[in-house]
Length: 279
Image 1 (tube, rainbow, N blue to C red):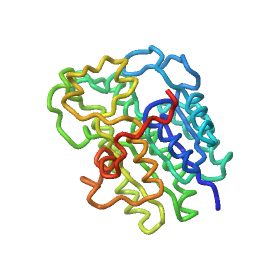
Image 2 (cartoon, one colour):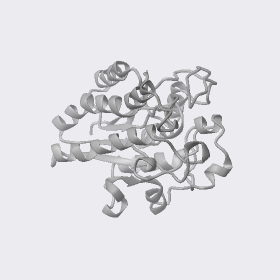
Image 3 (cartoon, rainbow, N blue to C red):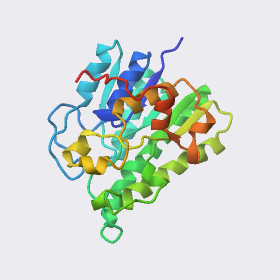
């Protein structure tokens, strides 16, 4: 039986890292990408360049600790060619990719700017990271899935793409740029399913709800803001990704053609799964 391979973006920490280890535990080889190769590297996260916990090397170590194989591929979703090169390297190394998890998200300035304040240059970066680079990965990896008659693509979207904010971004709501980019990404799944019906390739949108990440903590997101929502852990959402890799979700779990990961985690009793990162 051929070993399956997953390609995961944004895998240096959070949902991406947890998903890499969860899939590795279930026999997947994982090609993992992110900007942060080693601990302590500085990158812009929600307006701060302070190093965050987590790195590709740390994720790879956690994968190896469960007996898995990880290929670290440093890439930046704002540099489309670097991500395409990473995908091509994964194909050269492993021969095929069975699961693409478009998890990485642009975390620089402009995400929460008001409509009047957001700059065109910020929009360009947000759409590059959240729409154009995921599209480039699909265009690179989907042909191989179609040729084999099997594969899974999971695009991470957002609750904010489908719902109006309860308040301005600086008072616990959200802005325009980030939600609009995720709304654009969300349209990809339906188009792909129409274009490649009965191909054996499954394409999903997945909405993670509110997940408390290292970047959010560093940005000073308060308990007051989080209290408006019901946060899930990264490992709970990753457990849903792992389940989706080999299972078909019930039709009731697809409001607005998007899988609600917290609801699935609750149905499958995955809300309290432990972290697999050894931290």
